Length: 420
Image (tube, rainbow, N blue to C red; front, side, top):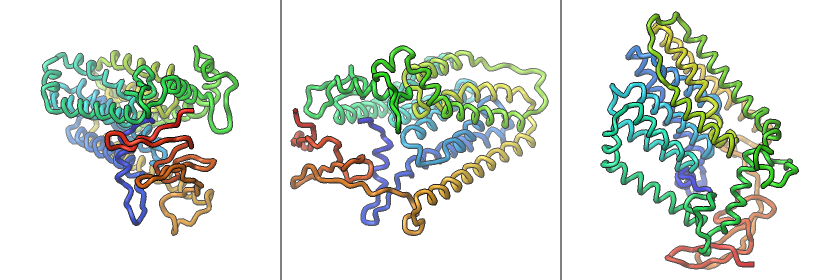
């Protein structure tokens, strides 16, 4: 139901016959993509003796992404998309702070592509398209927006958006699931609007810590998400310790970097005006907090952004000592990679012992056996159903509902639920 381009990318990473699943390669490539771009930019600025705000913001973002998002198996669509969000804000800062030295048309196009890529992983991140007007306001030149609209990129992104919407529609009957107002339930495969509305409430209830493994709050879901009935329980179950631990880590990274780069302050320094950007981040943070305050739905980035921006604005006030900056930067990068690898080695050792499986016979991952049964079969297709379990480790296509029917429409096999 929840479409993501990463699922489609992962689907080509299964190698037949040898049955080797490379489903962590997608998140790894996004992490590699981020690291390559950010490290290239960091060393370029070091070479040019440029320790501006974005130089330090890139370093802080690099450290955070690699230390906090160290486990690729946890990325899914959520953390991979948030890595791209860091990249979006890096590009926004680069354009707004150095627009007189850049090819603005090219950089604006890159920004648009990364925003669309992030939103294709997680549809909610399409709200970051609002950063485009902010950038245009900062550069005070509207001619670039006409250049973008006249380019072939606009056609590509329009097709990309239509494609995403079409996939959503063919999967759920909604242009943007679970926004029930965008749904058309008069198609056989479509989910009924009342069910979509219930699922929207369920997702919000889950994000606000209304339920989870082994617990469920006493209030009905509809009542729980109303007003701030959820706040005290969210603070108890989600803020402590998920948000608080992350916040502590962000502050530690900021302070550690501050003391590494700290030197004598510049005598003459022109402050960058970031109040409007801080205001936008506050709006994004409020939207996150009021509607889906789970860390996986953008919380990592939105909590880190204001702290990293403030720390970067403080650090750029110090005099540039090229030798010290180079040594400090390289030390921080090497330390980050050391922590990244150490955390993964410790985790792997712990999981091998916990699951008691043989690394030589199954070196890539551990999966329990899930019993399943065939609930529909004809000459073209088999549909499976998990027995007292979930679809995630059964053959596909898999359905939780046993009462299904299959029709041939427009050369497609259309599966839907039987009417009661």
